[in-house]
Image (cartoon, rainbow, N blue to C red; front, side):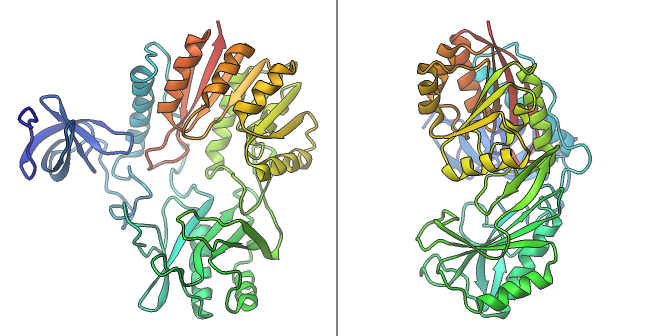
Length: 456
């Protein structure tokens, strides 16, 4: 331990150099990194070292001696307890700068891609608050009453919360109204420790363009005390609600949804638009939580696809068909693949809803289905991938390299796996032309990006 230049419980004056991917400040003493929550780049701070590991330490921010020009007061009263946002203490302009740097850094460090243009982040034009169209809020009990709120950082303690500043305001109203109605009718909250109680989560979904709302009650038990009265009161109190749904999750798990979903009142779906494409959204549908920025992201993907109307396009990880349907308007034919059967049913329904006839959808793993298509002689001029955080499967990347589409458009929610996968494609005969980050989740550390990749 002698070569470690810091000691636990000692104080140090440091200058913060960078942000980690989870929003902590990074300072270095003799090259040894210290991670400091709530510290920002360029700040001179005093820290107390609270934990020392072999290659790094954690410090607690004791004093800011010289604040960043981008430091602001976080407007949310529970910001420091709640784990939902990580960057409210950084101005929005500062967040966009930090996210661009994050993408640039991982492209260089992980992808060894040095001279690729990374454009300034496309942020929200007007108000970067109140953007989330879906709230999934755990329910607990305190002094006999129900509370609704998010979990405290690194714990399962619920922080009682009346509003969340990144939620659409209607979602806050819905969650609190449902909580009050359930409490009035004697519904008990689910208790993780005893595995008793009924109500686990309340979910609200909101169609930004249509104004339609869905309420989902996630319960441990199939029966809800006074269910009929509760549902009638929700419908009467909230005229925007078009659907009340119950999901039953009897398992001891922190996974939110169970397998059984049923409509208690109203419709099975609510509707929303991204651009001029209409989407049917069910309780379990994957639908982007910031539709305003989703349009920005998909328009950029469409631009990078460079479609003339003659192309055959494969959309790997197509979900409910969101990108596929955008592409179908400009392509000859689009084939979408997705592992979740319900999502493929939604995708087919959404194609019908928009009278789009040149999109086909298949259930399966992209890394299994696309190689099979390739062996059958089905190739693509353009291939679009929008994988989960873990990035593309190796088998899929190898199939892309063998299939040789002219262009690949990579939509990423994790810059680190994007950088890793770009390196594989570069070694397989492709060139990364440009990368456009898009801020889908203001005040959090998450950053999406679209990469334009062309065959050399």
